[in-house]
Length: 105
Image (spheres, rainbow, N blue to C red):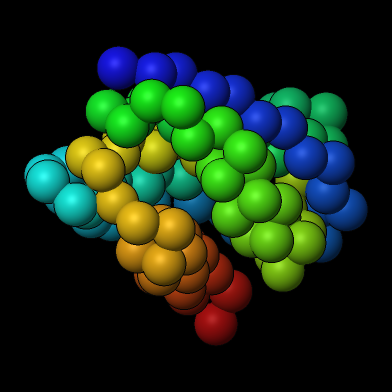
């Protein structure tokens, strides 16, 4: 199991007053994503636990794109990966954000 941590500086203009959002299931080829409001002084921190080792650069690229699209601050994201492809990771992150941001409407 490999553990990775990434941090992104966000503007915080999308912070939601919600405890946590959890989507997905950890299984072969899938992943679980949990989003939590945490005071991180404007950072978005993403922790990844993955069974597929040696893919740090790919995780970095996928998460750079995600962070650029959503510009979040004070958000802790935990990803438990069961070997998902980058496309599945993107879809699951978008699903988690859609549910998380529903609190704005």
